[in-house]
Length: 309
Image (cartoon, rainbow, N blue to C red):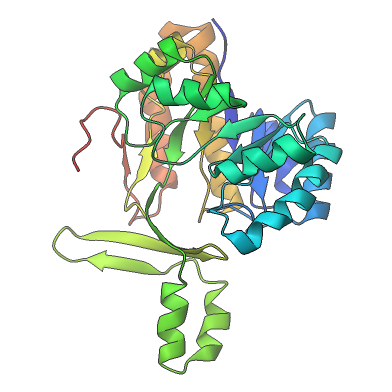
């Protein structure tokens, strides 16, 4: 039985070695100009350093190029993708076909991971993008366990599933919060807001707090809870899921490292010693619950329920 890759999102280059020691197999990094909802900003120099460090540790680096590219931004791909190829990144995450087309022209050797966040809902679509050059499909967060297993059974590409962290619920290209401040003539507050990670929408009726994340790609409203499936890994591991992702957007370095340690232990035991995994998985879940902020409860997302539209 193979072990799925443990994929994490570092906040900076300095975290690479720490996360590798914690058990990570691969890292998602990127630059806001090209990637959506990144845990940290990685310049070209940072990407190069991250790849060098990771490869020395026998780990992989995937770069997010999953923004929505309007006409004026497409030309930048013809410079950025050859750069990623030259520093030998292990894969590029994309959603917009413009990335695939540009890669064909200027960096055909790049390994492509198809990720649209929400439209990878069946194995036919996953395999379609496989015929276009994608080597991996990142499944939608709204799928239940049965659907995930069925897709893996029929997919001709690698399959990645998010197992921990918040998910995106809404995106607008507009800087909605920034525009609001500007409308009130509070320009200085916009600058201060760039470092603020505690902006929320509060739903009094449901007592939910939805984090707001703004980057160069606009405004993103995130889920009120964090997915956590550390105690329910058996079916996906038995099905052969290729990669488990911990998404650390809006999380501290320390949090991501501690969560990675728990999932490393859970994956290893689930593959190598299933009985021991059954004995300790509840304890691992309790440890993760203790790491959570008070206003960020853990749940199992859509893994065990039908999607309601």
